[in-house]
Image 1: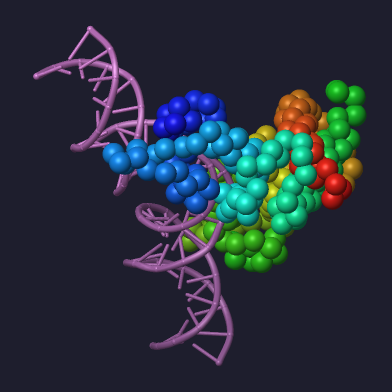
Image 2 (image 1 turned 60 degrees about the vertical axis):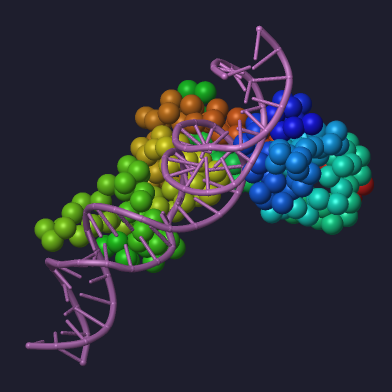
Length: 115
Length: 115
DNA sequence: CTTGACCTTGACGCCGGGGTCAGGGTTTAG
DNA sequence: CTAAACCCTGACCCCGGCGTCAAGGTCAAG
């Protein structure tokens, strides 16, 4: 399929797909006229890329997932190298939540009755 | 004190302090020669600004905390006068925590066995 | 044949939180 | 008096993840 169709199926934009390719996350074939040609598996791959990016990973981080982008992350086991990256992000996120909860506690202390 | 000394005491840079002022977070007096003049309380204020920014709040968000920036968030009750402002920010902070917890949940789902 | 939808590359814009000059003026120590 | 160290404003640069415009190639329908 071509880029526009993939963008529709994957729920993103043509621009984003070209950006992913520029970042080395996708490697579509090229038709004789220069058009990008994607296989069906690209839909799932793009879904995974978007999932990982939405978790706060960078495009650089996502490159570490390339060998297993075909697998479904949304529930299955993940390749170990990727697991380490995800675990590192998890601690980042948990630290941020903890810090925000400290602030939240202080704000609540600051509202003795007006709450 | 002048800007360089404040930067040292607050553990940040001159550039950042000028940026905070540009964003309306600091309002130092000016000496006759044009130099910024900060009081001692500015050290704590800058610490609070940096704390809030480090939690992912924007400079715009931090402006809502201005009336109580000099009261150490680490300490007891905060100025009751700005209770409503703080209450509004509290919901913001809670929304932010909720969003991060969604991310946290997704990351944990992605690590079904290593956690 | 023309229109319009789709595709190509290249390049600039945006946001946030500053970093880093450039080109001055001021203060302070020796 | 001079040199170092400080201060000023203004302006451009950076990153990530695209949006958006420009200028043009390709292809199917009418």
